[in-house]
Length: 302
Image (cartoon, rainbow, N blue to C red; front, top):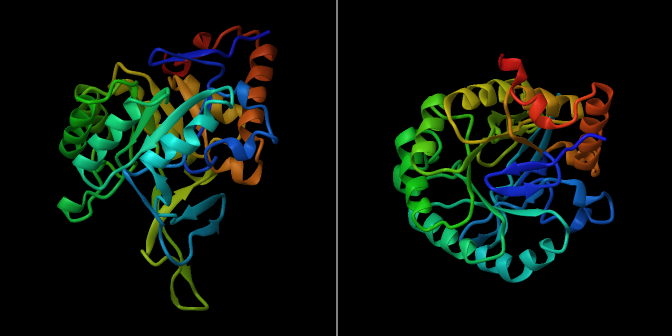
């Protein structure tokens, strides 16, 4: 029997598959659908310091092999999460990741302080949020901006800190090195790719904000390329995500060097996708006489 356990940033995980933020709620919705105890963890709905209602208008739009979303980080806020959602997540039998966004460094820092004092296992810092003081450009576009927010958060964060990177970064290698130098314990990537859709009957963009985030199998080759680059750039663990829908997809990322993977959009078409992908990884390992993931992690790089 293969051993799927992973130790990530000092945290013991039952398997390499983590449910990606924004695709799995806070986990409880899936408790009767799949075995959550086999998962490496659940990254909860993206949080901001103060709760927000999200975007108006169309929020989801299907594309060939993908899904465009414009949710706008609808969430109940950090304190509500700590008081209400977190206690229930801790009962689900897997590690709890708090995904934290913010519109200013001050918001990031205060949110990280609050989450550090809670029972979350890992903080996943989403730096794809717009920096309102920089005219709305995401913190994750320029390495200097990312370095500043990660450094400030690191100064107050006592939990393992994984920084989730945007594929819109000007220079992905420089970005990875910058957040590592600023104190990140790990990196996760990619977040959604910026995309657009037009309703030809209405003759106008589908989304009120015109651009939105593309996920799903269509982005997987791009995500795999960026994970490969990230692994080669840093000495901290890299968590790969972007279009992973099968065990074979996940193994590709692990062979590229990923310490673990996240499954996101696949959960919308198959609510048991995270468990299924985990089982498919185990079946492949048994068929190929691979006892631990360490035997294949990064093997494609040799």
